[in-house]
Image (tube, rainbow, N blue to C red; front, side, top):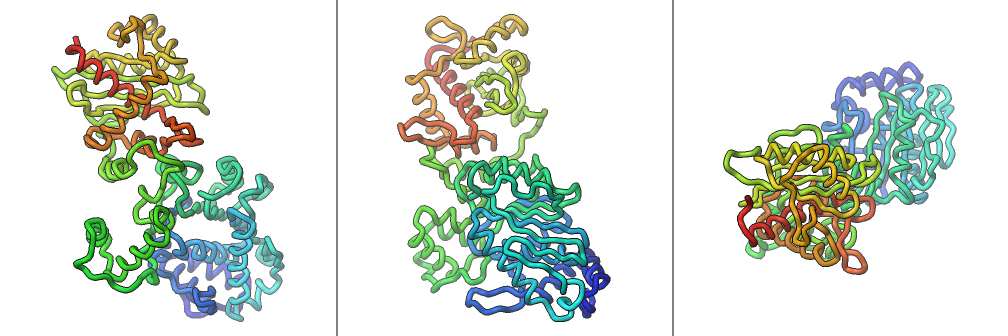
Length: 497
């Protein structure tokens, strides 16, 4: 980055933009040289990138889609607003849109942007930026044909009619209304080379932000996680090392925390109690507190989530951790669906009959016929496994296709002489209880991140019944509960034939 900012002419601003694009170090240098913020004490000063801001700048360099999970007050929102502001004034034809979760948050964010403009060095404000036109929701730069706008997520028409270059969606986990629809509409306005940043503190293990975080690899978004201890001001009086609990020793060892940071952590837990994990995140799993009372033991799920690895083999929607072994017996359990792309998934779990070990998992939007074919192929592959299908609703169709189109005969038959398993008000609680016990007692049996995340969003409703949280799915959960229930019944009755 050159030492001279120039006259603020269009040509000089474009030059600064090229220098900023040249390297992340130049981008950091320019931001710290021209942007001013109001610090925690209310004093206006030049922005000096903190650890979280610097880490984000480097890890997001050259990435067009980013999603950020963070603790409170990390300065990330300010940093992104500043970076997009600089891009807006150094790249002619740029349209930047900030979307806040409430009117108040949007206005507060835009005050930061107005301050960036008002506090620019004199040399920059006297040139092409002198003609800037400001309002409460828009700053236009006629000489550059660029503009910076702020919207609220409650406006379903936010961004419509624009071609957006930079889109910043802040506190996505707290967007009102139908955030998925709002985000989809905004995404549709983003230019092909545009940059999208979604960021939020967590707010429950369900909803739009949760889904975007979980599906980041599928959508191409780069994940960024920033725990509370990256903020240097989050410290308190040092605690006595001899007083550390086992959990505090674990966190201190894993994150390299000082005794002053442990002191601050204790204060957080005193002030925020159960919400401390959400408001001051320490890892990207436990910070997503379940919306409502989770049916299963959250600590057991989170612990297993940290340990699971990618499947050994992946065939589209079929994940495999352990292939069929000669001489071993397997069980395939199926939770069918109607096949609608907007509805529930069809799910199948393959477990080792003797050990209960999860070997493979299929989850896809498939019709009853497609489900029957896939399940029969899977059962055949796993040593002609016993195939147990939930016969409720769409299960009748799957069972019919298994006998006709698939000609697969080794189908589970319940005690009443009918093909398939009946999930009823009596059997369902027992199935879920057995799955819950297995998650606590033998967590190593489960290898699927999809399954465990569904367990995380499986909550206890007002009537005490367990179900997926609004907007979530429980297909893998129910397929595994069925697999364990059939295994338990078969093992207690007689050996499988």
